[in-house]
Each structure stands twice: as C-alpha cells, then as structure tokens.
Image 1 (cartoon, rainbow, N blue to C red):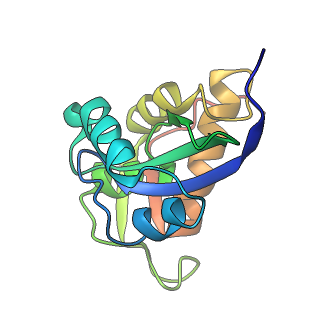
Image 2 (cartoon, one colour):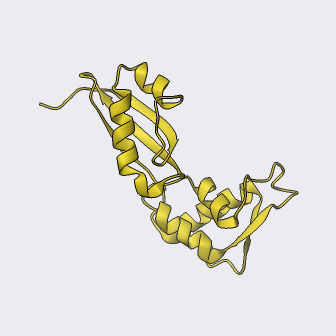
Length: 147
C-alpha cells in the first residue's frame, strides 16, 4: 500500500551545506521529520555541486518519512555566475551591470530545460533572456530566436 503524503516543503539550500540551522531545521522540525537524516542525504547527493544554491522539494509522509527531489540551480543564480556578478541591477531598465553571450544563454537553457515550462530550446532561451533582462544583464550578439 502506498504511503499517505503529509505535504511538501520547498527550500533553497547551498549544495553540500545543509545543516540543522535555519531554514532547514525549523522547516523540517515543525513537521516532526529527522533533520540530521535529511542533512546527511542532501549533502551526500549534492557534494559535486558544493556552494551552488539548489532548490529542493521535500515530500513528507504521515509516518514521518520523507523523499526529496533536488532541482537545477535557479536561472538567476546561473546568470550571475556566467556574468561574474555579485547581484543584479537595482534599476535594470536604466543601469546594466553585466553582459553574456547567446551561447551562454543556450548553455543555461539546455541545463535548465528539465525544470522549465518549455518544449523547445528557443522558448527556454527566451525565458532565460527575459530573466537576464529583468536583472540588468545584457545579451551580446544577434538573437538566434525566431519570432
């Protein structure tokens, strides 16, 4: 018989750095889940992505057990890495803070394709380009996206 789902918890944690302090401890502790067990499993699975912010969706069951899915890093985080920036522009329509190429946009879109709501690589690239625009990051070159 299948386990009865108690709910979901969504968190963003740096890879390989889960510990019982906030936000992990309070989120799991309030549901009665084993915090240290989650930290060990998460850190084991995300060792190769150490330091990158990773969204995780934890499904917890009525018997206090849990499963979790680690997603790819958010597009905004990947854009900051590619452009070598600390943060986006506070006024993206006026002040541009960095630039990337369409090849870099395509790389991010291909890596994020499994988590995006897009069927083609062009639409995924369009989504990544929109995020870049809203962060004040310009994209160099001619757009390969066909309108």
